[in-house]
Image 1 (cartoon, chains in turn green, cyan, purple, blue):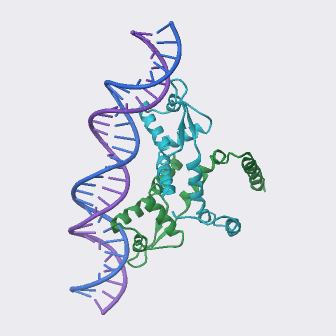
Image 2 (cartoon, each protein chain N blue to C red):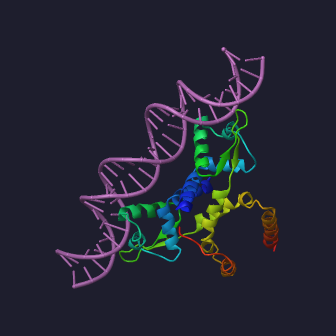
Length: 115
Length: 115
DNA sequence: CCATTATTTATCTTTCTAGTTAATTAACTA
DNA sequence: TAGTTAATTAACTAGAAAGATAAATAATGG
């Protein structure tokens, strides 16, 4: 199943705090490898490996601009994760009020999907 | 930071499709180890290990009923993940209308922390 | 007490991961 | 062309993860 592979790779990539920090940085805009490496007390090859993991998970893409390889965030797998985790929303919204408003929200969404 | 540890463990636990399937099963209600193991072509100790990983990540808890140890879903870490990924919603909702309503939505929300 | 059922722990193997330093490739610049 | 900057690849190590089988623990029922 292709979606399972996407989730495997995405969850696995995001299990590392360095990689989550890189994602957070890229949310502010493109960045080069050196720029991304700057905040970390870690060698450049280590960062390069982290970027490769993120790229294989589809979470980033890389361009080419002279000798720089700017990285940019790709959110497809993030949406997969959001969709996956959304199924369990009712388990953390245990208050009946909140569950109620959640159910109303769903009904509203279904209506707007029809439209 | 405690929240980062929670995310590390939760993302890591969910990177495995067997463990995600166990979570999905537990969404339908409590289950024993043997019940959880049944769909998998895998030894019981292997399942027991997966459950330990999920438990250490706070994704399940275990009771005791005679010789059975019923597992139940605990959604706290799932909420952490949902909150984390939600920050990136604008990257997969590229429509300007949706982005606009997203921005209006977050104006009502709190300040956030780090990655 | 003994047997049965449910589950875990111990031990071992194989594979994967994250990091290191050193060497290499790629593109610009003087 | 030589030198500099950006980034990757190669080779290695230490530790974690996922699986197996066999043995141990826990609780129940005759």
